[in-house]
Length: 274
Image (cartoon, rainbow, N blue to C red; front, top):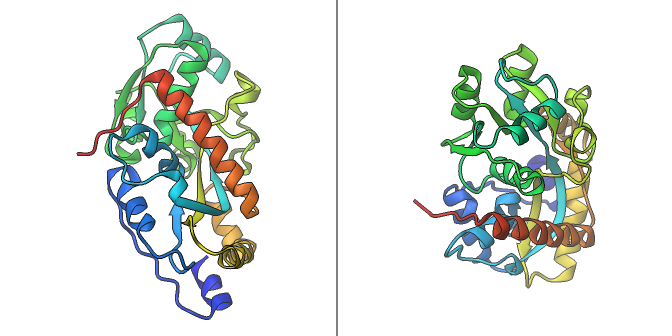
Protein backbone atom coordinates (compact mmCIF):
# COMPACT_ATOMS: atom_id res chain seq x y z
CA UNK A 1 0.00 0.00 0.00
CA UNK A 2 2.93 2.34 0.67
CA UNK A 3 3.43 3.77 -2.87
CA UNK A 4 -0.26 4.71 -3.12
CA UNK A 5 -0.25 6.23 0.36
CA UNK A 6 2.79 8.32 -0.53
CA UNK A 7 1.13 9.56 -3.70
CA UNK A 8 -2.04 10.64 -1.90
CA UNK A 9 -0.31 12.28 1.06
CA UNK A 10 2.61 13.76 -0.86
CA UNK A 11 5.15 12.53 1.66
CA UNK A 12 7.23 9.41 2.25
CA UNK A 13 5.78 6.43 4.10
CA UNK A 14 8.50 4.68 6.09
CA UNK A 15 7.78 1.10 7.18
CA UNK A 16 9.56 0.51 10.46
CA UNK A 17 9.72 -3.07 11.75
CA UNK A 18 9.91 -3.51 15.53
CA UNK A 19 9.40 -7.25 16.15
CA UNK A 20 9.52 -9.09 19.44
CA UNK A 21 7.48 -10.31 22.41
CA UNK A 22 4.51 -11.45 20.34
CA UNK A 23 4.11 -8.00 18.78
CA UNK A 24 4.22 -6.12 22.11
CA UNK A 25 7.49 -4.34 21.29
CA UNK A 26 5.92 -2.69 18.25
CA UNK A 27 2.66 -1.94 20.03
CA UNK A 28 4.43 -0.28 22.96
CA UNK A 29 6.49 1.85 20.60
CA UNK A 30 3.42 2.88 18.61
CA UNK A 31 1.50 3.78 21.77
CA UNK A 32 4.24 6.27 22.69
CA UNK A 33 4.16 8.20 19.40
CA UNK A 34 2.59 11.64 19.04
CA UNK A 35 -1.14 11.65 18.35
CA UNK A 36 -0.86 13.69 15.16
CA UNK A 37 -1.75 11.11 12.50
CA UNK A 38 1.84 10.71 11.28
CA UNK A 39 2.50 7.43 13.11
CA UNK A 40 0.31 4.51 12.07
CA UNK A 41 0.45 1.17 13.85
CA UNK A 42 -0.05 -1.88 11.61
CA UNK A 43 -1.97 -4.02 14.09
CA UNK A 44 -2.90 -7.69 13.94
CA UNK A 45 -4.79 -9.95 16.34
CA UNK A 46 -1.74 -10.11 18.63
CA UNK A 47 -2.33 -6.45 19.51
CA UNK A 48 -5.74 -7.42 20.89
CA UNK A 49 -4.56 -10.57 22.68
CA UNK A 50 -1.46 -9.28 24.52
CA UNK A 51 -3.22 -6.99 27.03
CA UNK A 52 -5.24 -9.98 28.25
CA UNK A 53 -2.44 -12.57 28.17
CA UNK A 54 0.71 -10.74 29.27
CA UNK A 55 1.60 -9.81 32.83
CA UNK A 56 2.90 -6.40 31.75
CA UNK A 57 1.86 -5.67 28.15
CA UNK A 58 2.91 -2.03 28.39
CA UNK A 59 -0.20 -0.69 26.64
CA UNK A 60 -3.98 -0.95 26.58
CA UNK A 61 -6.24 -1.40 23.59
CA UNK A 62 -7.82 1.90 24.67
CA UNK A 63 -4.49 3.63 23.97
CA UNK A 64 -5.30 3.27 20.26
CA UNK A 65 -8.00 4.27 17.83
CA UNK A 66 -8.65 1.87 14.93
CA UNK A 67 -8.67 3.57 11.53
CA UNK A 68 -9.68 0.66 9.26
CA UNK A 69 -9.62 -3.13 9.12
CA UNK A 70 -7.73 -3.70 5.86
CA UNK A 71 -7.70 -7.48 5.43
CA UNK A 72 -8.73 -10.62 7.22
CA UNK A 73 -6.03 -13.29 7.40
CA UNK A 74 -7.66 -16.73 7.22
CA UNK A 75 -6.33 -19.74 9.04
CA UNK A 76 -6.65 -23.23 7.60
CA UNK A 77 -6.92 -26.49 9.52
CA UNK A 78 -4.21 -28.78 8.14
CA UNK A 79 -3.36 -32.33 9.18
CA UNK A 80 -0.55 -34.77 8.52
CA UNK A 81 -1.07 -36.95 5.46
CA UNK A 82 -1.83 -40.11 7.44
CA UNK A 83 -4.17 -38.51 9.96
CA UNK A 84 -7.15 -40.84 10.52
CA UNK A 85 -9.78 -38.48 9.09
CA UNK A 86 -10.71 -37.48 5.57
CA UNK A 87 -12.73 -34.37 6.41
CA UNK A 88 -13.36 -31.91 9.22
CA UNK A 89 -16.32 -33.81 10.66
CA UNK A 90 -14.23 -37.00 10.98
CA UNK A 91 -11.38 -34.97 12.48
CA UNK A 92 -13.79 -33.54 15.05
CA UNK A 93 -15.07 -37.01 16.01
CA UNK A 94 -11.50 -38.33 16.31
CA UNK A 95 -10.47 -35.54 18.70
CA UNK A 96 -13.59 -35.73 20.86
CA UNK A 97 -13.40 -39.52 21.04
CA UNK A 98 -9.72 -39.70 22.00
CA UNK A 99 -8.99 -37.23 24.83
CA UNK A 100 -5.32 -36.31 25.07
CA UNK A 101 -4.23 -38.44 22.12
CA UNK A 102 -3.67 -35.74 19.49
CA UNK A 103 -1.25 -32.81 19.34
CA UNK A 104 -1.43 -29.47 17.59
CA UNK A 105 1.36 -27.15 16.49
CA UNK A 106 1.50 -23.36 16.64
CA UNK A 107 4.01 -20.65 15.83
CA UNK A 108 4.16 -19.85 19.54
CA UNK A 109 2.12 -19.04 22.61
CA UNK A 110 -0.46 -16.31 22.11
CA UNK A 111 -0.60 -16.66 18.33
CA UNK A 112 -3.81 -16.89 16.27
CA UNK A 113 -2.98 -20.57 15.70
CA UNK A 114 -3.23 -21.27 19.42
CA UNK A 115 -6.34 -19.12 19.81
CA UNK A 116 -8.15 -21.08 17.09
CA UNK A 117 -7.32 -24.40 18.74
CA UNK A 118 -8.24 -23.11 22.20
CA UNK A 119 -11.54 -21.77 20.88
CA UNK A 120 -12.30 -25.17 19.36
CA UNK A 121 -11.43 -26.91 22.64
CA UNK A 122 -13.49 -24.43 24.63
CA UNK A 123 -16.54 -24.97 22.42
CA UNK A 124 -16.31 -28.76 22.25
CA UNK A 125 -14.51 -29.93 25.38
CA UNK A 126 -11.91 -31.74 23.25
CA UNK A 127 -8.59 -32.37 24.98
CA UNK A 128 -5.53 -31.81 22.79
CA UNK A 129 -1.89 -31.07 23.55
CA UNK A 130 -0.26 -27.80 22.47
CA UNK A 131 3.21 -28.01 20.89
CA UNK A 132 4.52 -24.44 20.35
CA UNK A 133 7.26 -23.75 17.80
CA UNK A 134 9.36 -20.70 17.04
CA UNK A 135 7.55 -19.80 13.86
CA UNK A 136 5.14 -21.31 11.35
CA UNK A 137 7.71 -22.91 9.03
CA UNK A 138 9.14 -25.43 11.55
CA UNK A 139 5.64 -26.22 12.78
CA UNK A 140 4.46 -27.12 9.27
CA UNK A 141 7.64 -29.11 8.68
CA UNK A 142 6.91 -31.30 11.71
CA UNK A 143 3.30 -31.81 10.66
CA UNK A 144 4.53 -33.07 7.29
CA UNK A 145 6.96 -35.35 9.13
CA UNK A 146 4.15 -36.70 11.31
CA UNK A 147 5.68 -35.40 14.55
CA UNK A 148 2.50 -33.46 15.39
CA UNK A 149 -1.03 -34.08 14.18
CA UNK A 150 -2.58 -30.80 13.06
CA UNK A 151 -2.39 -27.02 13.02
CA UNK A 152 -4.57 -24.01 12.39
CA UNK A 153 -2.00 -22.42 10.09
CA UNK A 154 -1.76 -19.14 8.22
CA UNK A 155 -3.20 -19.85 4.81
CA UNK A 156 -0.46 -17.81 3.15
CA UNK A 157 2.23 -20.00 4.76
CA UNK A 158 0.49 -23.33 4.14
CA UNK A 159 -1.01 -22.74 0.70
CA UNK A 160 1.97 -23.95 -1.33
CA UNK A 161 2.28 -27.20 0.63
CA UNK A 162 -1.46 -27.77 0.39
CA UNK A 163 -1.32 -27.42 -3.38
CA UNK A 164 1.75 -29.68 -3.60
CA UNK A 165 0.11 -32.36 -1.50
CA UNK A 166 2.31 -32.15 1.57
CA UNK A 167 -0.55 -31.14 3.83
CA UNK A 168 -4.27 -31.89 3.82
CA UNK A 169 -6.59 -28.93 4.31
CA UNK A 170 -9.84 -29.76 6.11
CA UNK A 171 -11.43 -26.38 6.83
CA UNK A 172 -10.87 -22.62 6.90
CA UNK A 173 -11.63 -20.54 9.97
CA UNK A 174 -13.37 -17.53 8.42
CA UNK A 175 -17.14 -17.17 8.08
CA UNK A 176 -16.90 -17.48 4.31
CA UNK A 177 -14.86 -19.67 1.99
CA UNK A 178 -11.53 -18.43 0.70
CA UNK A 179 -11.19 -18.12 -3.10
CA UNK A 180 -7.63 -19.51 -3.04
CA UNK A 181 -8.99 -22.88 -1.80
CA UNK A 182 -12.68 -22.53 -2.59
CA UNK A 183 -13.36 -26.28 -2.31
CA UNK A 184 -12.38 -26.31 1.39
CA UNK A 185 -15.39 -25.67 3.69
CA UNK A 186 -15.46 -23.32 6.64
CA UNK A 187 -15.36 -24.65 10.19
CA UNK A 188 -18.87 -23.28 10.53
CA UNK A 189 -20.12 -25.29 7.58
CA UNK A 190 -18.37 -28.49 8.61
CA UNK A 191 -18.58 -28.57 12.42
CA UNK A 192 -19.44 -25.51 14.51
CA UNK A 193 -21.73 -22.80 13.09
CA UNK A 194 -20.43 -20.24 15.59
CA UNK A 195 -16.73 -20.84 14.90
CA UNK A 196 -14.62 -17.94 13.62
CA UNK A 197 -10.93 -17.43 14.37
CA UNK A 198 -8.52 -15.43 12.25
CA UNK A 199 -6.02 -12.65 12.33
CA UNK A 200 -6.38 -9.34 10.54
CA UNK A 201 -4.35 -6.42 9.25
CA UNK A 202 -5.48 -2.99 10.40
CA UNK A 203 -4.35 0.58 10.86
CA UNK A 204 -4.42 2.02 14.38
CA UNK A 205 -3.36 5.45 15.62
CA UNK A 206 -2.96 6.94 19.09
CA UNK A 207 -6.29 7.40 20.83
CA UNK A 208 -6.02 11.21 21.00
CA UNK A 209 -5.44 11.63 17.25
CA UNK A 210 -7.77 14.39 15.91
CA UNK A 211 -10.91 13.30 14.05
CA UNK A 212 -9.83 15.08 10.85
CA UNK A 213 -6.56 13.13 10.73
CA UNK A 214 -8.35 9.84 11.35
CA UNK A 215 -10.86 10.53 8.57
CA UNK A 216 -8.06 11.42 6.15
CA UNK A 217 -6.11 8.28 7.00
CA UNK A 218 -9.23 6.19 6.48
CA UNK A 219 -9.73 7.70 3.02
CA UNK A 220 -6.09 7.07 2.15
CA UNK A 221 -6.23 3.47 3.39
CA UNK A 222 -9.37 2.64 1.42
CA UNK A 223 -7.97 4.21 -1.74
CA UNK A 224 -4.68 2.30 -1.50
CA UNK A 225 -6.47 -0.94 -0.63
CA UNK A 226 -8.65 -0.66 -3.72
CA UNK A 227 -5.78 -0.41 -6.22
CA UNK A 228 -5.44 -3.38 -8.62
CA UNK A 229 -1.83 -4.18 -7.67
CA UNK A 230 -2.70 -4.21 -3.95
CA UNK A 231 -5.76 -6.36 -4.59
CA UNK A 232 -3.61 -8.78 -6.57
CA UNK A 233 -1.15 -9.11 -3.69
CA UNK A 234 -4.00 -9.69 -1.24
CA UNK A 235 -5.36 -12.53 -3.36
CA UNK A 236 -1.88 -13.96 -3.92
CA UNK A 237 -1.41 -14.44 -0.19
CA UNK A 238 -4.89 -15.85 0.37
CA UNK A 239 -6.13 -12.86 2.38
CA UNK A 240 -9.65 -11.46 2.26
CA UNK A 241 -9.96 -7.73 1.56
CA UNK A 242 -12.08 -5.70 3.97
CA UNK A 243 -11.55 -1.93 4.01
CA UNK A 244 -13.90 -0.74 6.72
CA UNK A 245 -15.03 2.61 8.03
CA UNK A 246 -13.48 3.88 11.24
CA UNK A 247 -16.69 3.16 13.12
CA UNK A 248 -16.82 -0.41 11.85
CA UNK A 249 -13.15 -0.89 12.75
CA UNK A 250 -13.77 0.28 16.29
CA UNK A 251 -16.75 -2.08 16.69
CA UNK A 252 -14.71 -4.95 15.23
CA UNK A 253 -11.78 -4.46 17.61
CA UNK A 254 -14.11 -4.15 20.60
CA UNK A 255 -15.90 -7.38 19.63
CA UNK A 256 -12.60 -9.23 19.13
CA UNK A 257 -11.39 -8.05 22.53
CA UNK A 258 -14.55 -9.27 24.25
CA UNK A 259 -14.49 -12.61 22.44
CA UNK A 260 -10.86 -13.50 23.01
CA UNK A 261 -10.62 -12.20 26.57
CA UNK A 262 -13.42 -14.63 27.45
CA UNK A 263 -11.56 -17.55 25.83
CA UNK A 264 -8.29 -16.53 27.52
CA UNK A 265 -9.97 -16.49 30.93
CA UNK A 266 -11.82 -19.76 30.35
CA UNK A 267 -8.66 -21.55 29.19
CA UNK A 268 -6.35 -19.78 31.66
CA UNK A 269 -3.91 -18.75 28.96
CA UNK A 270 -0.80 -16.72 29.73
CA UNK A 271 2.04 -15.24 27.70
CA UNK A 272 5.43 -14.64 29.30
CA UNK A 273 8.15 -12.59 27.60
CA UNK A 274 11.47 -14.33 27.12
